[in-house]
Image (spheres, rainbow, N blue to C red):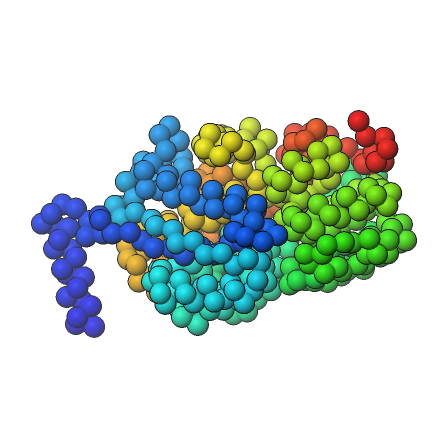
Length: 421
């Protein structure tokens, strides 16, 4: 304790004598774990880009965007202008690799915090490693509800989870009947079989029973499948009006191609984000991607209510020649939240960072997300997040729900495959 106090006094003395932060030349090393190779590599590349843009803003500023945290640049003022240094790791979509990379980043790379991992099953194992080593772990994207039900002390999640997202689907169907006179009765489920997909299946099944819908078919398929013919045939045999689907990019593309080949044309596909919001989804499928509705947390058309969305997206577009997606916007926000906490902690001590994260209270006006803000509850879950639904119209995502936020009228039902132009 005495030694720690002496060290703190020395830091304060340096600040007074030099007029500069003791951390001015120091890099604050943050480990980030994402799928940079494998089936979700294109998604991982988008998330990496978002992180690098956020780092550049924190370290060097973003002129003309006064509401963006750290827009003035100069690094972390709470640590004398120290810069963020990202240390990347590739989990390849493998939970065991993710855990090993988390341990390597902590023990060898000496990172002060971790961010990741997009795939819920990898977030599960990597965050267990962080919990063991008492290192703050911030998750911007994984939506499996159980991740914040483990009693962890060092885990924080900014995105809403699937309890909210699945509830949004059923709120939408209820309002669709009340306001649009569209009545859905038969729902089919088509979800991948990792942690995320299996948990979503359980949630959707429960909501179907609670709200009096009929379960036309429930198909759980092997993640990273190379063919889905038999699974789609089973789904088609149930004759669902609506398919609720949870798939990462490769599976989302394969399933859509298989739907078309086998003539499965429901009134609507309600997608649980992930592969359906990846920019490669529209690029690869072209017009066959149109009309799918996906739950989301971000949409460029919401810039009419929050100019910050357009301003930061323009930076991303100018650098990477593509717009943010809900995935990359969440990841960008995750690093801003982590940097804010480290800055307020004024320290690289993991416990100080953890306490600062727990005390986070960022208003929605400072975010590019259509949320009320970021404020964590006792489980580490952000209490102020929200979901929207977007539909792909003419190759672009437009907000269709909540209806009061909609920028485009929902198109229902989806045209049959042979009726699309």
